[in-house]
Image (cartoon, rainbow, N blue to C red; front, side, top):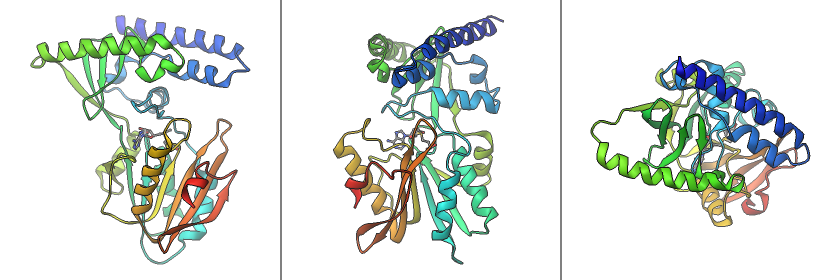
Length: 307
Ligand SMILES: C[S@@+](CC[C@H](N)C(=O)[O-])C[C@H]1O[C@@H](n2cnc3c(N)ncnc32)[C@H](O)[C@@H]1O
C-alpha cells in the first residue's frame, strides 16, 4: 500500500517536472535532463512484476556510470536496416555483432528484419550495463550496483541520485558520493544479511531469444574489451558520442571495433538525433583501412577519426 502511494507520488512529481520543463522550450538540454533524469522507480518493478511499459520507462530513465543513457526505441533503425540489406544479400551466413544494445529492442527488430528477408545470419548482442544488483535497505532506499560492484545510482524515497547528473543538478554528485561512502560502511557491516536481487534490463522477448540461443549475449565494454571473434557486420549506435567521451577513448573504441571486423566487414556507426533522424556512416574494412560506403543523414560525427 505504502509502495503504491510512493509510486503515485513519484508520478505526480514527474508530471510536475514535465510541466516545468515544457516551459523551458528554448533549452533542450535542460528540458531533456529534467524530463528523463528525475524520476521514481516503481518498487513493484524490483519485485519482478515486469510489464513492457515499465521496462522501457526504466531503461529510458537511467544513466550508466560512464554517462551514457540507456535510451532506445522501437523502429528507430528502420531506414538503417533497409540501407544495410543490399550489402548483406549473400548466400553465406553473415555474423553480426550489435554493440551497446540497451534493452535489445533494436536488435530484435534487426533479427526479425533479417529473417523476413531470408538472410542467413548469427546475431551476437552486447552491452556493458544490462544487469544491476539491487540492495534494498528498505523498499525506499535502494542501492544499484553494476556488474563490477560499483554503486551506479541510488534511489532514496523515490528520488534518483546519480553522480553523472552533476552537470545539471550539482548536488546530485555530492549526495551520490555520500551514499557511496555510506554504502561502503553498510557493505562492510551487513555483508551477510543484505538482500540482493539482480535485475535484467533486457526486453522480455529479447531475453527469451537469448535463453533459447537464437541470439547470443555477452558483456562487452567498447573501451576495454578485445574480441577474438571476427564479424562481418559490427553495429555501434548511440554510444560513441564526442560530447561524452574523450578523443583518446573514442580512438581506442574505434580501434577495438575495427579489429573485431573481418576483411570486407562492415562497421555501422552513428547516432540518432533528438528529432529521431539517424546520422550514420557505413564503412567497409579493406586492406587494413576503412572505406566509407554509405551515409544516412549527415553521417557519423566520427568520420574524421575513422577514415
Ligand atoms: C543510448 S543506449 C544505445 C542503445 C542502442 N544501441 C540504440 O541506439 O538504440 C547506449 C548504451 O551503451 C551502453 N554502454 C555504456 N557504456 C558502455 C561501454 N563502455 N561499453 C559498451 N556499452 C556501453 C549503455 O549501457 C546503453 O545501453
